[in-house]
Length: 305
Image (cartoon, rainbow, N blue to C red; front, side, top):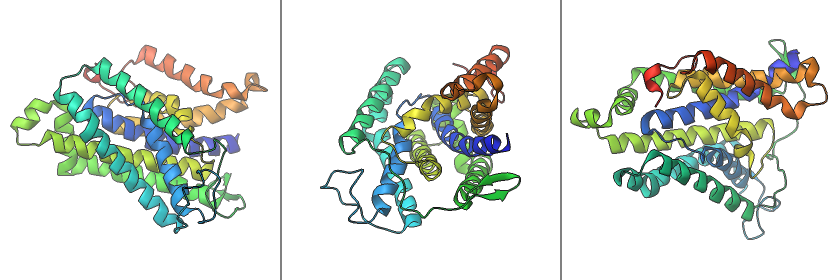
């Protein structure tokens, strides 16, 4: 059970970081981004491309030779690439849709189409085979009663630190307050002198960078796949909804709970031989909670719209 709980914490950290990114974007823009999983995958794929040896050609077609850069530097570059990609999505696609007053349902359909397009674009430039970062194998060690590799423990600590920093920035900085103002009313924030377009652009960039970081975490713990973001997208939505739609702190807690529930459910007696259904247990519990508290654990009723 302790092993399952440790695995749940690792999965929970991934889901938490990704859920915070999704919640941050929805809170400011009211966009339910189904392409969120593809930005997560971009973080892992870009890191693999930047860090793999130059003669290492498995994931990419022969004409794309990896760069063989330092792994930590590759992670930073990949996160910046995700931020740039998110910014381009806002400027080239979603800002024109917003200025054209396109309805929320239409924008939702656009994100679904974008998700399918990007995911199959990855498949076009990849073999579909599972890959791993060029890192040495490590022995599992005991950390706070949990057995995990030093690298996985570092991911756990890094995730906690990142979420703490994000929480502090959103709560105590002028930028965080401006983001909350745009979230509450874009028109009133504009009257107050806040450039809502810049705030929304920053939100897209920061949300995409967090999503890319979640993808790197996922690939460090597991592996790199062309559809890796899509595989956990439902859990990310579940964490966001469970914690409270539009609340970053709620997304942190909701994502962590979903991750733990998914992994711990594997040890339940009735799950023996049916581990592929482990997501169903966590999602079922989420549904039960929402029946009694539709706004989520930390959400407010006025956020539901």
